[in-house]
Every structure is written in C-alpha cells, then in structure tokens.
Length: 81
Image 1 (cartoon, rainbow, N blue to C red):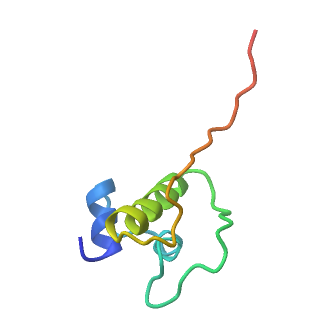
Image 2 (cartoon, rainbow, N blue to C red):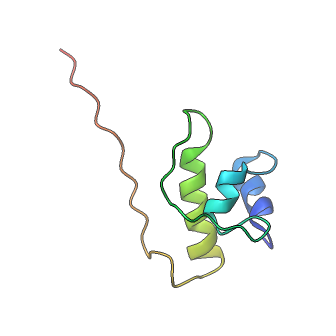
C-alpha cells in the first residue's frame, strides 16, 4: 500500500479514515498529530485509529521510531452476581 488511506480502506472495508485517524497515523496533508491523547465519542473508530496507525508505521513502513510492541488494554467490567 502506498498511502494510509488505501491501507485503512483495505483493513476496514470503509472509505477514507476520519481526519484524526489519518493524523494519528503520521499526518494528513503534512499535519501530524501533536498529542496522542484521544478524546473521541464511542463508535467513531478509536480502536481502528490506534491499531492501524501502529500497523501502518511499524509494520508497513518499518519505522524504528515507533514502539516495537502494541499493548492493548481492555477495560475491566464489574463483577455481576
């Protein structure tokens, strides 16, 4: 894949990524994400943003300046009795 937009479309089956997803992956139109703090409503692709940004940069582009491992933590639910 030669662009993140094509990579995103192939991975998700959707069209183009939201602007914040493209910025997190390394920039859209030269504007990279300055903060890695994500404040996005439920259902707007946070999981895809984080996982695909990491895969794009570390695996596809082979960038050594990105973390070697991606740790994904799930929230712990309350125990129900």
